[in-house]
Image 1 (tube, rainbow, N blue to C red):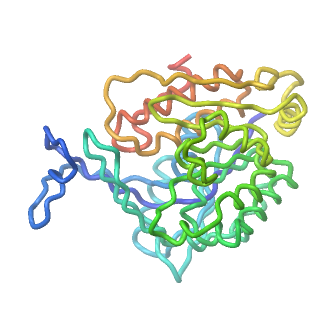
Image 2: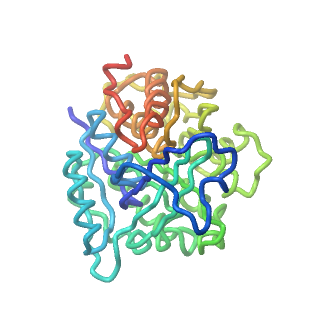
Length: 345
């Protein structure tokens, strides 16, 4: 039986200049007011949590539809064509009163990336944008990057709760990923702990990064195990916390929780036994050279969810998540570094 998925949330067009200079020791040496900085290439790709995860899941063998909102503009037409080029089904709402989101990713070698992001139509995405017919044909619903979507996070996540509650009622397995909060944006004024308290009871797999979760819980000194425990206490079924080059920490649900997921996915009894009551660390997958961290978290999540939907053991699923996330950073875009599961096993 083929299991289908949905990824919803933030989408846009990513523009990634390629910096060719060497020997920079400070970012000020790269960006010099009044001077020209030489770049090369034209790395333009689909971006945003929903697009990155959805494209990668299709690449990993899971038929996945991306749901989002875009503008009725040239960038929107470009985004639709790029999604088609990646053979990824879409259910996009075309918004005549907004514009397609875009990001400029400044991935300077030797420095953490800087992302200039215009949220565009993402800020207007809401529960009514979910295609119910596609939901009826799907087994898993993933939402990516709510902190970059104003209507989703306002009122302590009321729209987010509406979406996740409806997915649970429809019998889908649910997962949630976060993104960083811009301290200068309206998102910084939200009560993110309250948001998580409201949303996590409807989330089977919570997949944040350590820095994102620390910020939202207002506890930057807590260790990763403490953060996972707090998330579980708020209602998350299982938690996997991404820590970049330090790997991942996981804390999974009990027997009843995992067996409930097993039934939703219509697996043979015992298929997901290896996912029950697990806690520990995943070591990072070794790579020779990092080019850009763009999309690494999204593709790692895509690998984990795709492995789950294909019935892989927990150990194998974690290995694939770590490997694909690491391989992602070997290219400027989120997809060129990925390889089929079969080549890693």
